[in-house]
Image 1: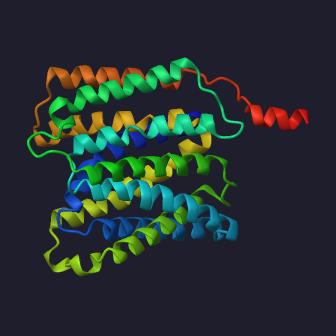
Image 2: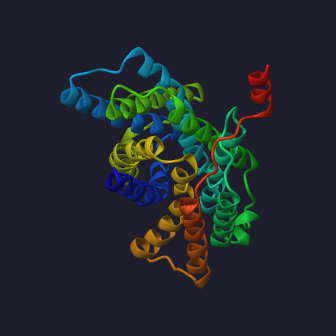
Image 3: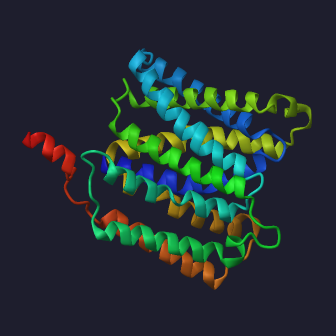
Length: 309
């Protein structure tokens, strides 16, 4: 299990770091929410058929109920927000705002009834990771540069980050699916359906013109289906089932670093001294969160009074 968990972390850290660039290419000539829906419906359908062939089972009604909630919040809400926002917000701004996911997850997990109180080291790691991301993006990106920041997109990104965090915590505590593959597949199908409905409601069908869709956009969509969804999302769900929320959410710190270095290696983008220092700070925050052990669960005063009564 340890080797599988390490492989899952590696897949989410590296593969999802590359999806920011793929999303940017995909939405150049494809409507955002219909693209998201197509991505997850195709990936979920393929994974469902494979799971059916391997196990000979279909998801139960309980599986579909769990998937409808988690898939809609995580994929249509969380991923959909990133895809929509990347039409107007620079990728650095998007990466920085997505990085609030670990903060949401730690706080929500703490504030829920019977939640776990994290040690101070976890908060120190979260703060260090955010500081490193701010350093990576730089002051010019934070104030929007010459073009300013689209506040509506910023709000959608923050809401999407919260939606992803809520779904991640819900997935950890929801009844386990009949099998891991069926759970991943049904979540992607549910999220894909929700994304398509949102796209249709916003009139994206009239914007869809496959005859003029670029090969780059279609290739990016194929990459997102295979690597971002079939590999990356399945690995993330495995992480949620076998580690803590704080540790699973550290991908939000590493992904922007991976994206920067992929740009340097594949697109000859410059990497400055500030980038190297920021990467070290971010990975330091990840290390602190990963190594710090959370305190035992604490009960809320209301729960204690109820037990005493």
